[in-house]
Length: 271
Ligand code: KIV
Image 1 (spheres, rainbow, N blue to C red):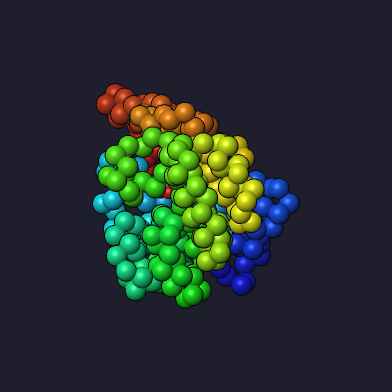
Image 2 (image 1 turned 90 degrees about the horizontal axis):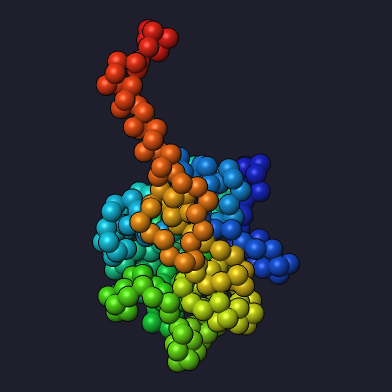
């Protein structure tokens, strides 16, 4: 966050003010410089360097394989393209669950080596100690509750979470705990809209929903999904704002045709 920048940077304090006045918070993922520059220029409040990079950038089935080094590579590329948005980076699977010293080391590496502004961690009371240590080092932490993809092998499915009373109560308790510990916001993934509404109203920090209905304080999507780059993934909660898959395949097909039929490059395109 350069103190010399003329553009007013989004801070965790500004996000809190947005919740206070009922202004919805926009959040979208990005994993590379060029996309991050476009997302930022469009006016996004938060850019998440999600571990969904494991799926959409690397082609893995889950978010588990991505490493801390790979997340730092993506995050530093994103940071170079961003002038205004708050850049939040996922702590990847295995980099914080083991013990709080390792969690702190991982968070510090992300902040030092990428220049990002905050980290995101999945879980509630189970990761309490790690959250406390990272926060006490001055690193802002965003929580993530509901469907937490790093625990997919525990859940066994990507279905909606917290439909049952016991799980809904734990989610509410975890949201209050994360707020108490000092997290600046929480992602609520794939939970009933009514529960997201109750949690958002019961906790003072912003709740950012994905598949959590319209009452959260903000919304987040994966950029490849909302731009239609990734055609296979079409859950009910996803709204597609473009069909880039078709546009890109057509453009590339046209280039191949022009190369094959000798029409590219023409005289004007040659030295
Ligand atoms: O990794 C990611 O993209 C995320 C969002 C789905 C919230 O965690």
